Length: 436
Image 1: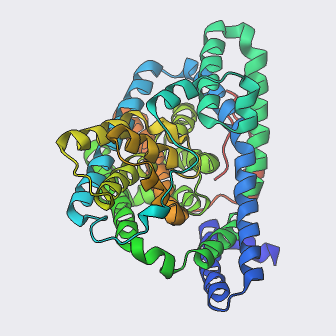
Image 2: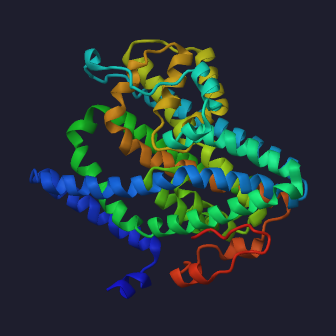
Image 3: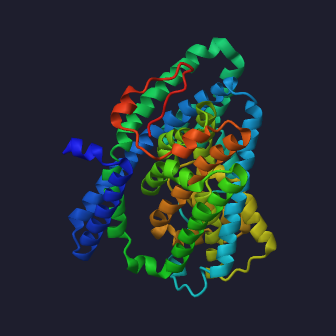
């Protein structure tokens, strides 16, 4: 049985889990099978919990190693700057799509909701909270609490310091490389459980969020999915062709395992090893990918920080009868491009939404209206995030002339087997291979 499953492509296993999860979710909801719904919830919850368990050590070690690895990359400063500029440019396009779709569809017009029951979520964001929250008061506390943004800050500082110290820091860097190898191997075992995790997550979503709950917000839900689909399948392919002279079909063939896992796991950071391996298989140099992907997994959020808050802000304004002007839309774009790191690669975008609402002066309670369907929305948002995190390094490498075009053209034509993952040797430069 196990050997038969190994012969099935990993992406097909996840798709099978998705189909079975939907079927079991409908079965649980239609027949009021609370035990089945609870089982699905437990299975899905354990999978996400295992992914989150690896987040703090994975983010810290990956960023420290990636910053230090820039020492061996030609024109590293220029590459880093170009990566940041492309992050900002694609985020600006994504938020433009969100605003345009919101103006076109009016997602909050005619929506009948109990506003008296709307309360602000427990997690809210403001510019002061965001800025002061970057620097931890206790470095250990950042890891204990799983504050990804603070861990990113610590890792960037430590990595930059190790880079400048040079040879004296090599034992510390070597330790981080070893820890990164260990964490990635353990996380690979968790990722292999993704088909089972998919079954539980999707099954629980279907069992918990039936049409009766989604119906009042159907227009908004549709708008979010359509907006993400436009960015995924229209904007990104156009950028690949225009900026990189690349075949979009080959990009999606290579990046699809990461996009698929992101959809079901709802975690950019948890998907990061798969994203990095996908980017490498697309022909992006490993030295550059080891910097761009971890950085993107914590700051590049076209779904959660651009499309979604733009649509949600328009929705909340319309529900509460507030008219938005040109200045407000410019503010939405500004917050999306500058404040996207507030999402920090974790599941959910509530902090980013409340940051946007507070900047516009809209009621934070409006975010509470959307909490019920947030898991449904978060699937497509995270898939869009991860696609963008793979897209930018690919385009930058193509424009820099460092992309392996032969590897790009053959990406996705075969899947990495467990045996290959186990046997693939570590590189001599210490940049650890990442599982596919």
